[in-house]
Length: 356
Ligand code: NAD
Ligand code: ZN
Image (cartoon, rainbow, N blue to C red; front, side, top):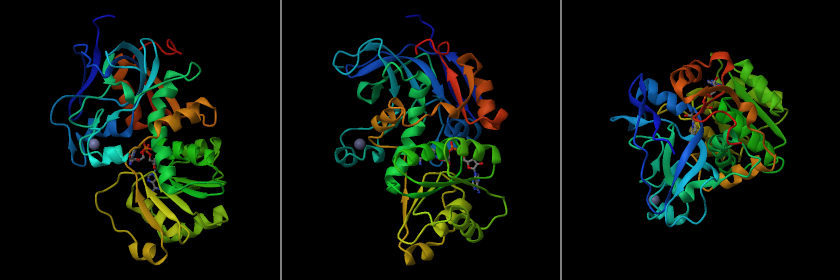
């Protein structure tokens, strides 16, 4: 093991630095992971450009990155599920294990969750990172490190589709064809949805959605009103969606999700938009349309891994750009501007494919 622990540290708005950090010591329940691949998430970009998301504020230097996979370099004395050399995907949030939410299994709602790159907790765009062993998932040999990193957004898609109750024959409306909308599309398909209409403002993203199996796409225009577009959704789909999943979070998309959903259906909100919005709640209540939130994922990593390992879902198409950790600034610039049709930008801490 070298002493090099090059790490991407966010010091404040527009101030990201690559610097050396000490290699962490591990406790008995932890493993040290030699990081391999780390995807850039919209939230990483948001912390870089705004320094905060809602009430999570970067007040001290924070290591960025949370969509990740690597190779176990050291195991704590009590670790039984992993050995040195195992290739693992890292579920980035470690809860307290003690509160009611944790005990009831809804650990994503734990108020004391330590989540990578959510202030004040460090992320893992670094060469060596320590993590709770039971939140590391051993990858089968044929699953790549990049796919391991993509289990993070894919788990959001699994959780969203579970919350929506997507099942055989579901007709699903997905709003937004960014990485989260696209993984939600892949999961909805694998859960048996027979019609999936996805919307976006960008035709190129809709083209990718089509390639990935969306049965219908609808290009939105900035001035569209939710009421008018709800009719178009039904016309294009030839049906009323019974599940609508907002992967955008704009007021207009959440409004459309409510108007377009069939009476008795479900609206799931994944996109994190403004903290307050004007929504047609009377319309929802009078038609018994349930509105549900999604916060990350909970016990979904295994299912996400099974989907990828079995070949049921192919997430590789989402990765459009690759950079070395030394090019982190360029990688963030690409993700932020969507340069070259960027969807998912992957940062390689070790040479690409060396651990596959
Ligand atoms: P993204 O910005 O890449 O994708 C959003 C997409 O929506 C873009 O393609 C954009 O063109 C499109 N869009 C914008 N306005 C639109 C409109 N009016 N109609 C249709 N499409 C429109 O982001 P992403 O990484 O895919 O994430 C999506 C959202 O999910 C973000 O708000 C993110 O913060 C949120 N998120 C939430 C959770 C959670 O736990 N709830 C987890 C991960 C991400
Ligand atoms: Zn807890």
